[in-house]
Length: 274
Image (cartoon, rainbow, N blue to C red; front, side, top):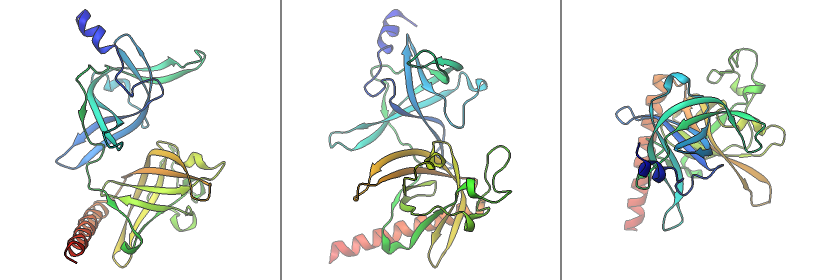
């Protein structure tokens, strides 16, 4: 690395200040329409090394040297957020990165920072997202793994799809949109219990299409934002990734997404002719 290059890439790009939220794209497979996106945040920049918070699931030392995509959301000219990213190399996985107070050490990923022209428009999903309205007859059920009966949670903290689902449903879950790979939902904040929605937590889910059936599996919490409701109450907006699904559920969900998209587009065409 030349001195010129080192001076150039050591300057963080807009949005990469300490504490900034980013996404580490570990793997993309366009042919199989699969993507592995893990939330993280910027911890700091030291010389020509950018440190990110360890992901969940964590990356191991064995992945050092791998190429990743580091992405973040930036506003475009309309003010809407759009994902941009750059290709980074994972230099090391540290267990002892000092935080701002200097007294706390946390796990961190050491990656190469971006150059001035390294960012490109990207995508954090591989599937068409279908907005939900009340006329569609689609809703989601999530189970509280902490309330599941014995056998619902493994010794390693993993959960099985739908084990104890009917007796441990979370209330007030509103489905905002869905795709073949995940969904966005809104949930009421529950003081003292919001930890079940922390990044990386898993929740059994069932996505139900009234009159047509359902698909089920495990939902991985990939993002969580707090927002105020119309009545001033606090709500949580969650980004979920669908995992641990049987092949039949995956195929069924893909068919239902295609059918729903087709029906929505047909209604749009009919409305344009009326």
